Image (cartoon, rainbow over all chains, first blue to last red):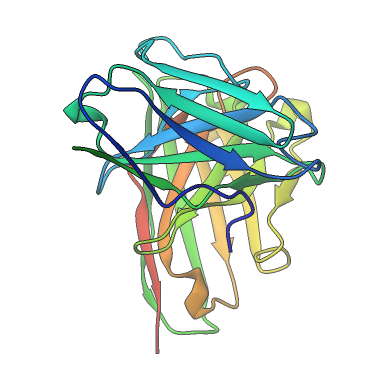
Length: 110
Length: 122
């Protein structure tokens, strides 16, 4: 059972914005601003999309943005495109000096 | 360009051992904090363990399901990270990714290898 809770699927039409939630506890998301998001295409390694809750690595589209409120982090994809259809995972550092992931969210572009 | 290449995966029986290797290039391996992250077939990501650089103490942190069974080590002269997996269980079946935690503080999984598949089955 994943430590962080994500919706199994989220969908939207091209051009729309969607938000993926990621809920943890005070021992992980709520206790630290060390939240990250990863994008993974089938058969490929994950790619870092967001770190420090809301920062984007060089080269990541500004259509991806992150935020956090309490024990819940969120990833928003603006201007949804067909290429955004894939799996997304959240992750957080924890008070036990470990890392936890969410179960993943499949984004479908209608 | 950063490259991480894992090897050593394969089919083993429950209770057996396996050692994975990961060769890194394109960055200063000696300074690198490195992790293994696994993904069971059709499932999500799971952090396995992290090894700090020798200069940072070379300490290892690991996830509860593998603590006491899996050991991380490194040979900086060969730019290689190892994952020694003992007493393997069927639930250890997964693709194992080697990851460089490149950013300051070693808190994020920045650069990933292509993964190597470990199958534990009788």
